[in-house]
Image 1 (cartoon, rainbow, N blue to C red):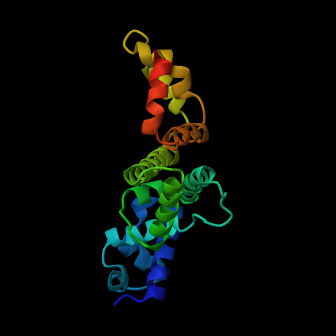
Image 2 (cartoon, rainbow, N blue to C red; image 1 turned 90 degrees about the horizontal axis):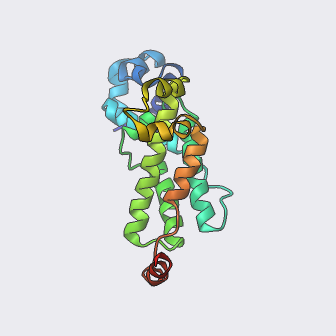
Image 3 (tube, rainbow, N blue to C red; image 1 turned 30 degrees about the horizontal axis):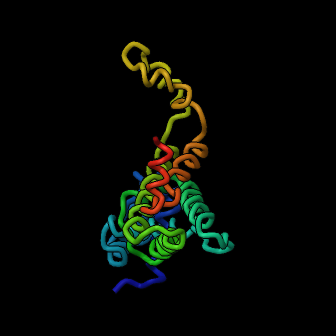
Length: 211
């Protein structure tokens, strides 16, 4: 049976390796060498690399503080997702590690509970709350992973690759595709995702405005 203290030491060492060398350098053997123990010792406590990555992902999400959140549920929701993004960015390849796992662990469930709870308080139905939570998490993971791996010259690459004759629509919006910061793109996407849900009683008014 895995010892909780020893398992925590293994995860901490793996996170040190992650910060120093990136996700590709993390392995059970590398962790064992860093700790000065045998590979069997690490394997006994975390079993497989997949399990190690799950525990690492949960530790990264554990950096999402639930203290001092806004009382308004809409503001709380946006702040929670922002804190989630900051937790990913605080660790090298953080989004890559979390995106590659499905960690139903303490810290991950705690953050998910807070996000879904805020959505329900905002008036989202049960399915809407669940799926909007997934959408916010997937969006944040994808954009943050791109941010952590994007070359500094991505704008130059786009400008060189997009030809007005072949890609007229892309050429038209190229300044916006290649411009702006990841923070600005994140805020834009977050606002779209967290808009209040449409209600059936609002539909007649929308129909009248469209006439």
